Amino acid sequence: MSRPPLAVALLAPALLIALGVTAPAAAHDGSGPDARLDPARIASLPGASTSALGLMSDNVQHLANSPDVLGISGCFSKSAPYFYLSGLDTISVFDVSDAANPELVGVLDNIVFENEAMNCGERRTKDGVERFVLVGNNLYDYSSSDPEGSAGSTLEDELVVVDVTDPTDPHVRSRLTTTTGDHTVACILETACDYAYSSGGSTGFSIVDLRDLDAPRELDGDAVTAGVQPLSIATGGHKWNFAAGYGIHTGRTGTRILDVTDPRDPQLLASSGAAGRGDNPDGSANGYNDFIHHNSFWPNAENFVAGAAPALANGNVLLVTEEDYEDVNCETAGSFQAWHVQGLPGGDAGEGAIVPLDKVELADLGTFPLPVGGFCSSHWFDYHQSGIAAVGFYGGGTQFIDVRDPQQLTSYGHAVWGASEVWDTYWVPVYNKNEVATGKRSDIAYSVDLVRGLDVYQVDLPTSRTSTEGGGLLGQVNAVSLQTPGLALGFGLVAAMGLRRLQRRRS
Image (cartoon, rainbow, N blue to C red; front, side, top):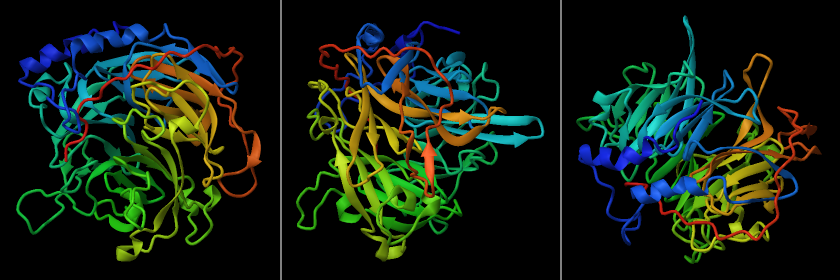
């Protein structure tokens, strides 16, 4: 299935004007104009998609590229081999039965800003498995599948439920305006997704009841105050991640861990304290948060051992990206980090119970040419059970980082291009013979690139190292046996283009 890459995106500026919306006049820091929605700039992006050569480390092979979508975020179904990808103008459905060659099978025109972290949900009903994705709209959203609902979806914080049960016919199912920011929206349990949390803002975050997908509603966080109020236990947020009954909240003031076993009543357990706000004990900057803690992954959280030495097998290491995209110095622009969860005491005792272990900037990861004047901050990432994280670094490409020793993070491999802006990288799940995800990741990685589209890589992962999951050895998981040669091409890499991002977070 194919389509003109920008058939809808190029209509976006005119459409927004018709809806009475204009792009924000200033960048996120208010320093000047932002050209993110300039139609000439958008139209110029695909020209670089496949023409620039790539530079791969010896353990990374480039298998395929799908330039049809200018990608922002995606997620995988757990009950069937599908990957849902959100871009500037569409939500695209890929069949990943052959992980090395994802096939585009469905497209929903959906002009949205920004849906930076799409989540998948699914439920078994009397009629079969019902699948859906959550879209976070924090500026505008328009889809021809829901023109009436789209008309009011401007300058609003809104959660949009998109039905993808039929992969060939994705469509908007429902919408909900919330009291706090929906820059990201996350399912507490990715399977049923009965409840979701918004990224929120300075006043707190929203809890959304999704048990009725046709009529989602926001829960009241303060029964005393009139009207629906947000929950103020966590503020300044950017992303929620969940593991083993815990919610990890990352944002402007660092990282918090909450007990979310009752999703309607989360309880604060621990935070990164002053260190997570970027401060040393003497008040000087520590370099661990120059803008925001962006997102996280907690490996083996179910094995958490309080007070133990930091180790992946002990379930007490938290991986975090710190984003600082407006800093174009690749030595300081935004690091990938490891933190030690020393304990989960709750209350005031939990302040500072999450402490930094190590961090790496793009400049620390290799001798490949670095972007000049472009974004090179760490961004979204995914963790592989072998102990290798796949991280998007904008113009710095896809970086594979060895986190098996969380106190000494090192480069494991890379894939960088002359014109590229990698926002996300995902390990493709291992699906069993019934096409159900097993919980393991394969050795195939998908990079979501705002310039190139969707890139597919195969990575030669550690094959016989101490398990990061505790107990015994962990071999390499190969979901697909591939004979396709890689395209590791040495060359003098041109400076990666810097693409200005639109105003992204509103308090």
